[in-house]
Length: 83
Image 1: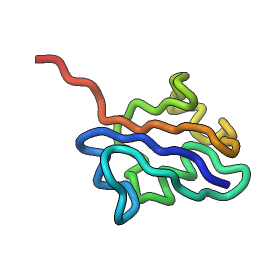
Image 2: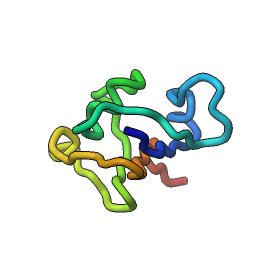
Image 3: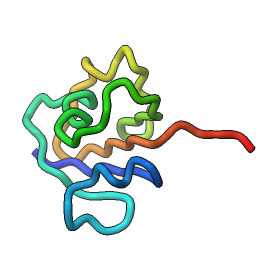
Image 4: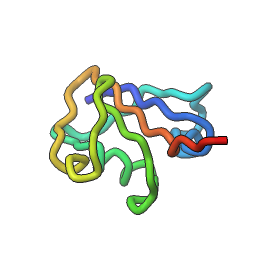
């Protein structure tokens, strides 16, 4: 199935080759979870990321249980930092 993956700055390097900008439409297995997608793209599981599924935050505890569907949007963003 196909989903849209959005990233920013430090996580953009994990987009598939040939991606333009900070998002890409990617193919993932049926029943994939945010954790599965992160693993598929080589995003380190021990990193601190803001992960959202269709705009709703996905906690670390739920990254292995939220099931993605065709057309969903998954965002994996680096942690916000104050200045």
